[in-house]
Every structure is written in structure tokens, then in C-alpha cells.
Length: 414
Figure 1 (cartoon, rainbow, N blue to C red):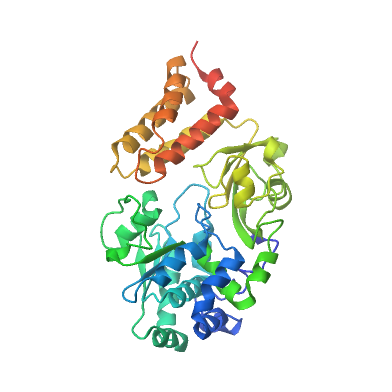
Figure 2: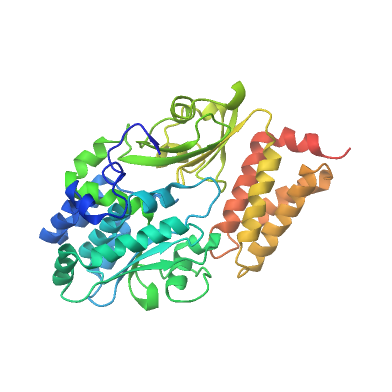
């Protein structure tokens, strides 16, 4: 991983699944502090302004607080490591190289909310991440810190690894819950939200892998330290998955709020073969495109939202001049069409229709009515599914039509 600000992920970079090595570098201090004053953990997370790193940027303390306030009994903390969207590869790196940091973050969440079940949910298409995580979990189970957590909970703590379905839709939080229960990853309608009714009806927290990886550092060093790592009004650091037409693609840990221009041209080395920057798919391919005029945008949740896009997972797929936007959008919508679980007919049929029309236009077989069909589908489909898959597919199509309608027009048959 290329990193210019190694503050959160560095400590466990070389220790892998070696728990004693992790603890020797200061690991375990966060969960020890949590055990000393469990009630202080959630306020500390709130002061740090830690947000969900899996896409939505939802305030972490707002997920934890309802579970902490629920009556004692079965409660779950799930680390969501499904990660299957094109251009996103941060979570697998964390599970392969910093598993104890992630697990400690989940255990701190359990202490803060009095949860007696912790599940690390890993995509089986990432076999190394799955194997390393299993090894790391087995080491925690026999450690004195684990016994101290059980003592604080007044009973046994379950810490397990559950392979996901390996499907893209399996990363949606209610689909995660369905899989942990042993079922097919069909998303569920909300409300009720997982904090109210999750695994087997119990209060449940579902946090992204990267979100939990930030927690031990916040507990160890304090909320002010964490906030000070960000730029402007942003807090902490972010793992940016940089790919596409850049000289140095890779995973970069940088201050939250680093500009798009700095990420692409300083850390990423600029464009391939001296080509000009054209656009970037932000947060993976399910958000709006940013173009040349957005190179100055700080890459944090609020700033990117002001440009009518979303930071999402922090994935940045860069496109250069000479690369066809319609081709890229067709590829991504095909991915969404294949990833739809089929539970909601408008989503399954809608993504299929979007993909069919895009493929016709991309291959030079499209006509004016196809372009009109795309525009109509973008008006009709949003909100028609139980999860955000169809909305993500529509968003990227709609954005590409807005910014690059000339490319669509040029591909139409006369």
C-alpha cells in the first residue's frame, strides 16, 4: 500500500496475524481503555466524528448508541468485509495485513454496546483474507484481554468468522444479517433497522472493515488526535483505492479531505502515457462522475456531496481522454445487472434493460429511441428496490448522460 500519512494502519503492517507482535506495538490499549470506562466509548467516537467507510458515511456513534441502550441479551457486532464492487480493494488489504486492528475495533464496539456476539464477515473470493482472519480470531479467543471482555459482559463472548455468499448484494447490511442467520442474502426493507432488529431479531451493528480499523487508534490517542489528522473540517484519514488510467494505481492512506488532484497527480503519478484527465468514478461505479472542473474537490464526505456525488468507499476509478465513457458505464451496469438478487422485479428487469440498451449504443447499434429509453428508465427506476443497487446503476447512467451526452450521440446510428 502506498501511504503518505501512516498513522492508523502502520502499526500492524508487518505483524499480520501475530497477536503478540500486534500487542507489543501498542495494540490492545484501545480495548483496555474501553474496559476501564465502557460508557465513555461512544461519546469518544462521536467527538472523533468517525463515519462509516463502507459507502454512506453515516455517523458511527449513531449506529452504536441504540444497541448500547437496548436491554441486555443477545446483541451482535458484525464487521462487514464483503467488498465486491469494482475498483474497491481496501478492506481485503486490512484483513490480510492488519486483522488485529480490525478485530480490536469490533471488540471495542462489543464492550461499548454490551454485545455478546462479534462476527467478522469475509468474502470467500478473497481466500487469503479469510485464512488470515480466521488465524487472528483464534488467537484472540485464548488471550487474557478476551477473558477480560467476557468478564465485563458477565458471560461468554462469541467471536467468529462467517464467509459471505460472495455476491455483490451480500454486502448490503440487511443482506449481511440474512447470511449470518444462514439464509440467502436477500435485502430487507427498513425500518426496522438492524439496531432495532438484526440477527435473529437481536439488536445488531453492521460496520465496514475500515470503520472498525479506525476505532483502536481513537480510543488509544483520543478524539482530538483523530480529528486533527483530517484536512479542513474533515476528520481522520481515509484509504483511497486508486485505479484506472494512472501511472501508480494502489491503496493510499491519506488525510481525509486530500484533494482529488493531489491523489491523482501527486500520489498516483498522473495520467498514463501523458494523456489528459477526463473523469473519475467516485466511490466505485455507483455514484456520479466528477470531471476536470472537480479536481480541486477535497475528498471527504461533505465536500464530495456538495459536488452532487458521494465519497462512497473512497474508490477512485480514473478515466483519461480517449477512453470511452459509454463503454465504461456499460461494463459497470452489466456488473449491477449480474449482481441483482432478483427479489425486486423492477431492479432485476431494470438493470437488465439498462445494460441491454447501453450495450447496443456502445457497439454502434443504438438509435435515437435507445437514448430516450435510457432517459426514461432513469426517471422510472429509482427507489424501486429494497436496497440501493438499482439506484446506483441509475445514478452512474444519469451522470454520464449529463456530462458526456455528446459521446452517446456520436455512437448512435444515423
